[in-house]
Length: 539
Image (tube, rainbow, N blue to C red; front, side, top):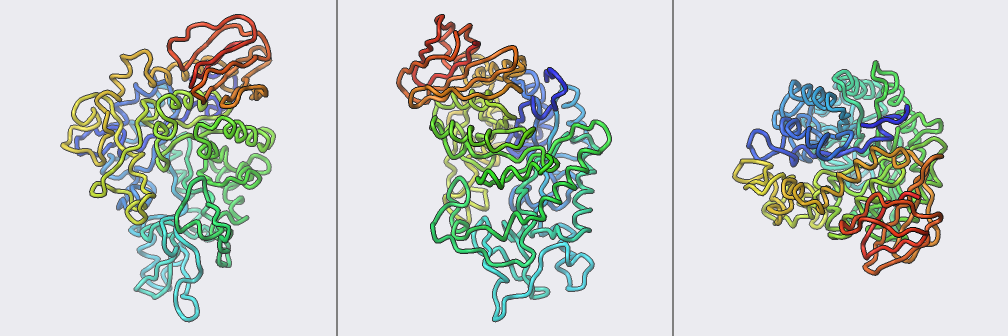
């Protein structure tokens, strides 16, 4: 990646999420693997031009939640490869200038993890307190009213001892007890294991869940019927989640974790980014730390609430900029393995605007695999559904955004040679694939490539200031990225109508438009955009 100063790589770079099961299948079993990622490193570094890849879980797992139920924090599931392949992947990525970020799942393990097997074996086992166990309520039943994200009580009674264990997600995912110093040290040892293997950073799964109320008090009922997240969560929304996540003590855990990462032997530019679904800015920014000594970044999911709504997008970006502590670095997410596909939320034309929005805002962008070719949300028939959330709660399934990457128009889309991949392909993979779009100068993929190259070559588009443009028509969002020596106007027209704006200074030259037929701009300060057009103009 191009580094213009001593700015950390995670501030100048673009993070690309790979869901290993669905990226590339090298051994022909219908499931993606680490060898498959290895095969596509040149695509990532040279063809596409991203700077860092984030690997969703590849650890040994019974796959109750497709890897987010970890049975061994320091190994690779044979489904994906082995440690030797992982080491080669890191080395080959680094040789291409790519950073490697891995998923870290600290809130819960698999119920098949040796720690939990010991913990549940008896009341006096040395690892009993490694998980959260409680007696039934007086008269019987779960210890409190907490609800699992996936629906139903967050407690399951274990037959061996008659006690209940806590699971914020599936019953196959018991919550670790981070109040036990031995658990904390064991989980930090897992980080050290991967740091020694050259990992450049960690994406921390459900980071705000790991510390709960020590008294395990009941959550208040949600009488206002407000959703707990950016989308309806079913039964989970019936409570206000005061006590089952984000206890004050969590901040000391992240200060300790940050100290571990920051002081680890060279290179000393490791990073942490936490999955934190909070939309109260005052609470969210606390995860940076009072002295910016906790997470390098809490993931910012706010734009998921404003698909294609220019006014809402502007409002959310301005809110974030105002909320950030001095020196804190922003970031943006428009899609991932838990959200409906970007292309289906924004539409064909809107997807081009979304690409420019994501890559031109101030902050680190995270790009989800397949969004660069516009893979749509798939409609998975009931017989093919895999996601445990969707199978338990119809309508909540995430399979539709996890379908395989399409590389070519061959059977299996170049993803696999197996008779059928683990999830169905999107319907138009024969034309919506990497090979086809590379041949089309006007394709979405080539737009992403142009945007990524422009961002990489232009300091103002990496670390420059963000200034919103005040006077824009309804349906438009305009902002300027600037340094002391250069300024670029970005205007996004999310409406179907032609729109004109007055630039704050004369237009110098067009750098890029989402509309391939636009090659120049008039002189002066008046800029007219076609419907669903975005432009980047030097001022």
